[in-house]
Length: 90
Image (cartoon, rainbow, N blue to C red; front, side, top):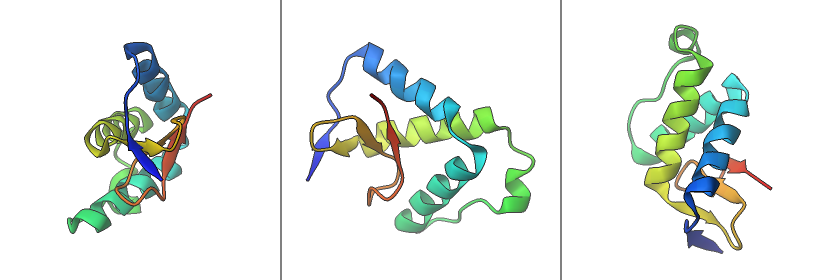
């Protein structure tokens, strides 16, 4: 079951930090899954070589804010609309 995200600013900061601690390849896969589900072009591995891990993490954080969904009870925040890729905080 999925819930809308309802957390404190400190919680959002934890999500932000977790995005920035994620591997570049994971972030790229999550971005591409989101693009696929929205019916828009994703980012190729070649194009991703030109983009910093920080930029991808910022994009994933923005996508989480837009998706606004977490697992039941919180702590796993959906990146893509289907909840395949998630950022988890403790």
